[in-house]
Image (cartoon, rainbow, N blue to C red; front, side):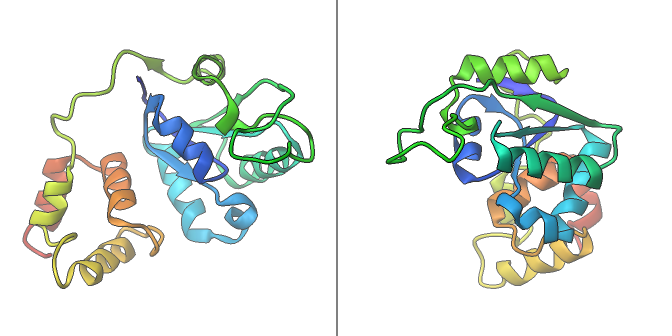
Length: 195
C-alpha cells in the first residue's frame, strides 16, 4: 500500500473499496450523479482541494466523463488534479455483463494501473502508509463522545453542522474528514471541552 498526499474522489463504493486496498489516502465518493445536487459534498471536496489537494479519478466511460466534467466546473482549478485510468475492454468480476461502454472501471483496474494514473496526474505518490503519529483515531472520537456512546450520533451531527460537513457522514467518514481538516491537537483544543 502506498501513501498519496492528496485526497481522491471516485464515483462509487466499489471504486472506493478497490482504492482503499492499494492506497493510503482520504477517499471520497460522488455516489454517481448525486454529487451534482449535493452541496455539502461539493463544499467538502472544495475544502479538500484547498487543504491537501484533490485527485479526480473516474471511470473512462461516458458517465465518468460527465461526472469529471461537472466536478471540473464545480471545483477550483487550484489544488485539483485529474487522473485517468486506461481504456481496457472487459467487465468487473462482480458484474454479470460488461457496462454500456464495455470498459473496465476504476474498480476493475490493476493496482499498477491506478498507481500509474495517480503519478501521471501529478499526485504525490510514494512510500509506505503514513505513520499514525498526530492522526485523529477512533479512540479520540470515542473519548470526545463522537462514537460509541448513547448521545454520539447527536454529538456527531452537531460537529458535522459546525464544520459544514455533510450530515450523513458515518463515524469512519468523519474520522477521514477530520484528519484531512485538522490535527489531533487542533481537534482537542477546539472541541475537547465543548463536546
